[in-house]
Length: 463
Ligand SMILES: *Cc1c(COP(=O)(O)O)cnc(C)c1O
Image (cartoon, rainbow, N blue to C red):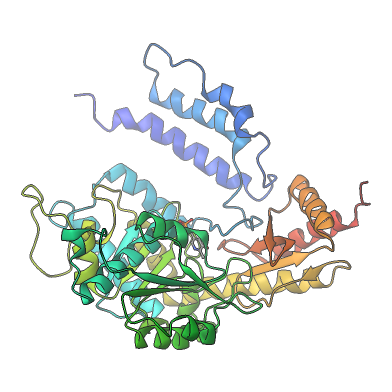
């Protein structure tokens, strides 16, 4: 046998040293990578060696090749897209998930993983104020968590009109109508494509991107067959929340299933200060969120929550002789997500929540929103900068004047390297979008980032 711990030791020691070096470099290194993927291709892509290489040497070579192309996403000055950092307990737990290497699909086979994920799921339902009997599944991200909720909705609304989807499939089925806000995330459309449901009906939104309940009521007036309404908690640009209570009430009047995409915004529900934004959230039927955004666990981890366990399990359960399952009860992990085999990605969630506690989780969410507010206030004071959204949560969008000027300032800011914010387009204009999603962002990061924007604005316009 060559599998004693000594054969792992050198590689893991090297990995630990490199990991600590990387984390220690975050406060000072430029946020952006210094080389692009094409530039790095040669280092990684030499011809595959004929002979084996010592594991520790491989780890050293990996780091040497990767270092110039790493984006400092876990930096407190990274505000691009919507991307969380990594809490220490979550990172440590994630390493153990790999070392334990449990295929976490079955309670019977990997009981420690199942029990810890069930505990994490229970804590999440409690923190988010969602029904305690709901099923919680851990997916790769919100894309797949949205897919789980919408797939459950599709099955349930068809079953209610007597259509047996698992047996008869979609061909010849009654049409399932799907309603979304005009500013839903594109992965909702993607999930609907996976599901064969086609393009949804887009319902009008207000100036902050919130679905207009009157427009929803009007769009649904003639609905008396299977229907799904997909709401959003947390608009990518404004951070705004669809009016949950009103929209759910309208949807349920028509017998529709209501799914909520709350990839980052669902976390507003943990805070006494922000939960009014999502009042009525618990009356929906399924919810999707990410743990790799607001909760700051390492990639990848999304959370799919379905109020009716029997529905999600009938969609994703598989029953074969070699998978020995318990009847009833909490269900097997694989019955709640698309994957059969998977890593125990709920373990870092357990560790993150265990380390934060209730007050720490509330503090995390409120801290992100407070830093977003300070950034917005500081930006608004810089001449020539306009904050274009109502800052209600963690997202801030700014314009520097014309689209051209906004793009130019954005490019200078990225080149400066102090902070990373991403360019985007919202309501037909170019904007610089800021998402505060990293637990480690502090007042110094906010000040340094404002300084970087000020420098980018002050440089004379290039012609
Ligand atoms: C990030 C995001 C998604 C997609 O989530 P992934 O984790 O990237 O799969 C969906 N909806 C919203 C609102 C998001 O912010």
